[in-house]
Amino acid sequence: MNIVKEDSALSACLLNAEETQGNLDMCSFQLKTLNDLSKELFGSVDTETIIRNFLLTTMGNFGVLKGFVLLLPLDSEKGDRFSSVGFDETDVARLRHDCRQCAWYGKPHEKNDDQAPWACKHVISHGIELVFPFLVEKKFQGVLGLGPKLLGSSFAPHEKELLETLINNLVIAIKNAQSFERVLDLNQLLNKKNTDLEETLRTLSATIQKVELLENIKENLSKFVPMTVTNMIEASPEGSLPESKEQDLSVLFLDIEGYTKLCEKFDSTKVNNIVEKHFSVFMDAIHSNNGDVNETAGDGLMVLFLNKDKQQNALDAARAALSIQKETRRIGHERLSLYRPLDIHMGIHSGTALVGATKFSSLTGSRWTYTARGQIVNVASRIGSLATGSSILMSKVTSDRVCRKNSVKPMGQFKLKNVSDEVEIFKLLPDFRTKSKRYYPVN
Image 1 (cartoon, rainbow, N blue to C red):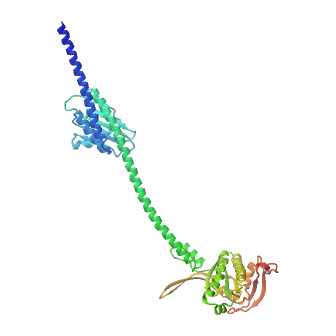
Image 2: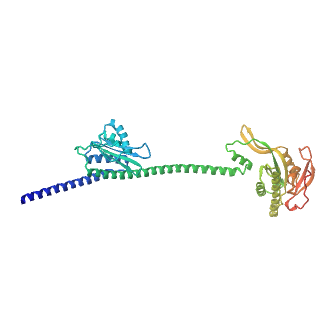
Image 3: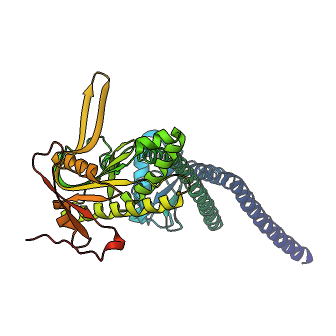
């Protein structure tokens, strides 16, 4: 009796030992599988390599003859990742197509004789025993398919649980790889933007240098070229200048009385300093009243006032002349101990002339000039030659345009050189004599 009880107890102990050993073997298998898979999955950041290593490790640990893994983007019909083992090359294309159906419509499924869900029936026809669809961050739909085991046994429940754990690790590894790929893409994009930025900076630097060079040329050019010409060049950088055309303007001629005697009295350096001092002041007065110095001689200037408004161009010329007259007196007073104040004579005439750029071509090349041509220029020059004692003389045309805002004095009729008819001349009075009787034209 005691022997029977002892035998029963021993048998129970043996069964418990076998069950415990089985559990230990199962745990050991699971730990080994997880360890093997972790080495393969987290040793790479390439999605294709991760999928391939996962499939090979899983098949090896479970003793499976064939299997596949598909990773399908949810936002695109292209760019899926696919890896398969144990299939003929001729079947891979059709298998890949059928796997896409499982990825979109399938659910965890094990083949048996009485149930075969329609979503996975084509995959099952390829000899797949077990199908596990899975999701990666709502970006990829994946599916794992495994064929039969070499031993012929079916997948036990604990093996299915282990596969779910392995797939979870696969999802984590794919997430890491996708993050790394995004970092790589961003890094490449940043490198490209840096390259583009460097190229843009080089181009910008070269452009700035060109602009600085052009500004320097412009600054130096303005010292020798009338402002009107500079503006025309800026408006037509390709080099085509508008043709000369008739337009209304006022012309002012200015010259220094006794320039020859001045040259005889002082050396050339001092004479140059005297002229520069006066002409610098003249330039300020001319430019501030919209005038443009067209020609210069040793002791004189020809200035054009081109405002399209007839009265305004005459008023500009009158204001410039009065300002020159005032500044000449100031300089003369300051330099009284050095030399006798200079007398600056000015003549103004208004009317229509041919104004614009003219090209002269010769064997030595071409030269452009910008000037006004016509009787108005000749008359303005002759009127200036009549002036004495730093006076400002003007024609009746100019006087009629300015007399309502400036004091003028009739000087009578004069015969001018190379002008057939006598010309009525008026004197423009300085600002401090505005109480003098004004002359108004008779309508």
